[in-house]
Length: 455
Image (cartoon, rainbow, N blue to C red):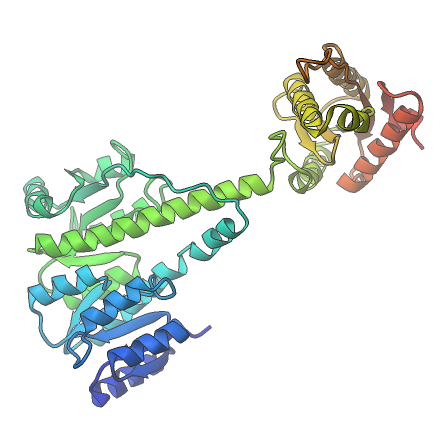
C-alpha cells in the first residue's frame, strides 16, 4: 500500500518540488497551503507522515505540530519540520512541540528520503492497533503507574569522549547515563539500556554500525532505541545509518538540550512499545487460558495435542489421550449454586495438575470436561495414571460451604492410546470420548480403555 505524506507549506513552488520528489520515490503526496487546511486534511484522513514548514502566516509549524499531537487521531503521525534557518532555538522549539526531526533547507534529498523511511518503519512497528483491540475486549491490564528512570548507555571511541558526552547530556536529561565499553553493552552489563548512543567509528571505521546490528540481534537490547553519533562531516553517513536501522543520528559536538529532547522522545516511544508488546503477550496468554481454572483452553489444547501426536509418531512412540468428566456436576450447581460449582472445578483442576508429570498436557475443554495427554507411555502405564487421576479427585471431599458437609466428587475417564501415524487429534479425542461415555453408562467413577471397552 502506498504511503501518504502530507506536505504543508504556504509557498506553492516548495510544495510542488517536494511532491515531485516524493512521487518519484513512490509516495502519495497530499498538499496543504496553510496550517488550518493541514489540520482539516489530517483529521479527516490521517496521513502516514507530515512534512511541515516551520514559518507560515496565520498558523506556524509549531502550532500545527502541537495541534496534531493533541488530537488522538493524529498523535502518533510522524512530523518532520522543515525550515530555512538552522537556528538552535527554533530546532528545540520544534522538538518540544512534538516534531520527530528538524531539517534545514536546502534539504538533501537522500537524507530526507532516509528520514522518511526511518520514521515510517518505526510507525509500521507500532502495536497501537493490537493494543487498542485488547482494550476493546477487556484483555489488557492497566499500565503501570511508575516507570524507573531510563538507562542510557554511551559507547564512544574513547573513554574521555564518553565522559564528555555524559557531561553535555546529564544537565538536560533525567536518566542513568553510563559510558561503557562495547563488550559490556553486548553482555548486557547492568541490564539492557533504553537508549544507546554509539559512535559511528569505534575501533574501526563504521564499526558502530556493526555494534548496532549485534545489539539488535540480542533479546535484551533488540527493542532498545539506538542513536549513532557521526563525525561532523559526511551527510551521506547519516542517511546510511538511518536506512540500516538507527532510530536517530547526531553529529559530534551535539547540543545537550536538543539531544535530551530527542532522547526523551525515543525512550518514550520505546517504553510505549515495550508496554504494548507485554499487553499483547498477556492478551495472547489469556486467549489460550481458561480464566476460571488457569488451565489451557480448547483453543490451545487441540493444536498442541496434534503436535504431540505427530511428534510421537515421528519417533515411533505412543501417546495416551484421556477425556475426564466430573460426575453429576449439574447437580452440584443446582443444589449449591454456581459459586460452589466453580470451587469444585478449580479444586479438581488443581488436583489433576499436581498428579501429572512435567510435559503432560492438561486443559479444560468444556464445562466440566478435561483433556489430558501423556506422551511416551504404554497402555498399562496410561491406565495406571488414569486411576491415579481418578483417586486424586475422589480421595478427599471438597469443602464448598461452611454450612454444608464436604462434598465427595468423582470423575469418569476415557482413555485412548495413539500408536499409529494415522492418528489425529480429532480421532484420538473421539475414541477417548466414546470410552468416557461407556464409563459413565457403566456407573461412573471409573476408567474405560477405548481399545477394549469403546467401539
